[in-house]
Length: 114
Length: 218
Ligand SMILES: Nc1nc2c(ncn2[C@@H]2O[C@H](COP(=O)(O)OP(=O)(O)O)[C@@H](O)[C@H]2O)c(=O)[nH]1
Ligand SMILES: [Mg+2]
Ligand SMILES: [Zn+2]
Image (cartoon, rainbow over all chains, first blue to last red):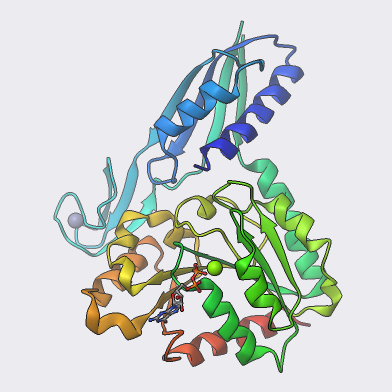
């Protein structure tokens, strides 16, 4: 649900940088966020499609890099990546783990202007 | 043409949060952002906390709600300053809403500010308000799987209150699992198991708050 607020903030940022570079139309926007950052990619895309209408990014293609979940496992003594967070180590199934990555907040990386 | 940016989308929110934080620091107002699912017991906790601490501290409350004002009315009955933020559909409070609400308080006349966020375990986690601490609350009937399912809120909070422990005999809630999963998201997380109904465990919470409120005073 908060994707609506995120997209509004994103569009403000896009307008700011498009203006700075004198871009009239943005055709591609690249974002990144962690897999457990609380963002639903489908909601984000939908909100973007609706809210970008009439803006400089109207019709722009949205690319979203999902950063993997990373846990540190005390049994394996190493950091391990996973597609989702399960509160256990995907390697040894052990429970002595700490979440160390995947919570990164939504970032605008770059964009292409026509 | 490629335009490089590399900026957090919520930078604007974070900037205003930093301004709020500076206001809290300047007026020495210890501020918490209370986050939970609807019905976990946030408003009840605030009522209890006011009753326990009001003789020693001047307390204010910001109530976030999607539309109605019942919670604000509950707090207003206690005679402490309270401001209602109606988010108009948004599932979280953001820093500019808090900035607006702060303008209606006399911050110099406050020691402790409690912000009750909108009932939601996901969205409020991302929006910093300038608070000293995020306090997450989980109630026993919601189940012990929440820390594994919604890691972010436990990751960003300083404290986890497990409320309604009086209901432990009636529902299956594995407290070991809930606590250990919550700590996997945040090894520094401070845990209090409480009941706002029987007052079990509340003294620990109050003691912690007293230490925090004192810690920001010169
Ligand atoms: N059994 C029990 N009920 C509680 C406890 N704390 C709150 N409640 C009840 O839970 C319901 C929701 O509480 P409320 O404070 O309005 O939750 P909020 O939506 O998080 O603000 C109310 O009926 C409370 O009386 C508790 O520790 N034990
Ligand atoms: Mg409430
Ligand atoms: Zn392992």
